[in-house]
Amino acid sequence: DTAVSQTPKYLVTQMGNDKSIKCEQNLGHDTMYWYKQDSKKFLKIMFSYNNKELIINETVPNRFSPKSPDKAHLNLHINSLELGDSAVYFCASSQGLAGIEQYFGPGTRLTVT
Amino acid sequence: KQEVTQIPAALSVPEGENLVLNCSFTDSAIYNLQWFRQDPGKGLTSLLLIQSSQREQTSGRLNASLDKSSGRSTLYIAASQPGDSATYLCAVIYGNNRLAFGKGNQVVVIP
Picture 1: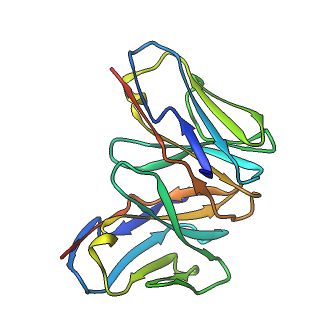
Picture 2: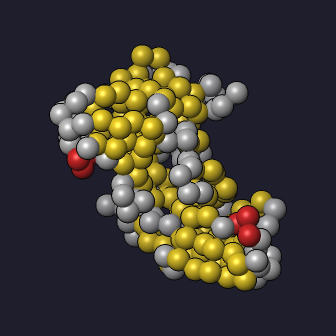
């Protein structure tokens, strides 16, 4: 009965590959987010979707493409992976957009070799 | 652009001592402020959400204050325990529910 879940938990891949990370929430929320935590542990927002509509796209390379098939799912596809993409990617969700508490998934640790 | 700073970056305290963690932000146009806890290799656990109209919020041994006009928040943890050892992250919520995070306060409570 995990509220926000992500798969896979760990992902090791080579430069140039394409990979996807999946996120699902069972909280009934209408807004989902992707955050990146870099090697210095700094967390930054990448994208958010509200009711399957892209709301935030925060200066992320277009190799990153989020997709929201429905309100409960937000996937992140990354093309042509680079060493600098190595990080922990967190998914989060909230109900609404006006200063609402966000709930985070456990994270996906991506290592690009 | 919203910038969030947390001081100190790391601290160690003996068990039983009170913890005081500071957070400052540059733009007072925020919706709310949220404090999280992150354990090594784990996700984020939400501790407290303070609405911009509130001055403080309490949950058990945790108390968070907010002074929006001066761009400051403080998280107090009373009577610290070894289980409180973690990184504490402050995040302000603004514009379309964006979270802008500080770099965290890494806390070690010594038994």
